[in-house]
Image (spheres, rainbow, N blue to C red):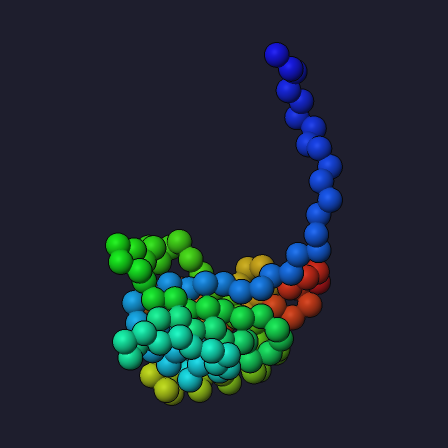
Length: 148
């Protein structure tokens, strides 16, 4: 028997970049309305089967990140709301506030309007059509440098 040690073997690590989040939804077309038409994501592609969207990829309005919307497969259930929260960052406090007012005017209901949190970020909370919690936020310099 070999003796186990707590030291991990050093492994060459690739420089990984976050690519996308897959969001399982009941109705891809309904989710497209929310993410594309209200939040401003740009449609990259959509796959349809029997006239209904089954999968769609969208690019964030700023930056290179993407999200994918995937129809629930047979037997799948959505997780409880407490299991997932999506974060989308606005470039400034003012833009966050203006954007929240604009989508509220389009019928989006907020659980919390933009509010300064104890850690210094401004957060607004809402639910997407499938009940996934979404935070629209602005962190400013505190995003990558806590304590500033």
